[in-house]
Image 1 (cartoon, rainbow, N blue to C red):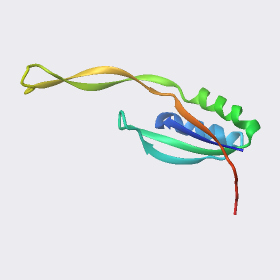
Image 2 (image 1 turned 90 degrees about the vertical axis):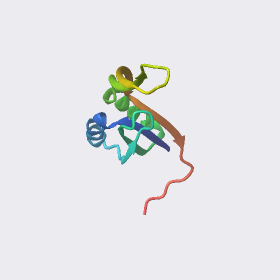
Image 3 (image 1 turned 180 degrees about the vertical axis):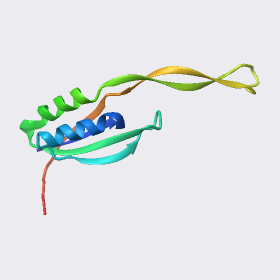
Length: 109
């Protein structure tokens, strides 16, 4: 048995959750916040049999797409740093970060 921890962007979490339900993958959803963009994420905790790990990874890869988003970055106009204006810069967001860990013991009460 494995524990899969999948951190996905909120925009992708609904569709992924629906697909997990269709194929009987039980997952616990946690609302989380990313540190870089301070944007909402969803973290899925999935306990799954070893032989189904690739199936779950395939679903995550299919439904969690990376995309480009613009964020504003302050730019100083003078040496004294008294005046700033914002410049939009593209950053890549989305996709998924996935951790897979072995489970030594599992109990359900």
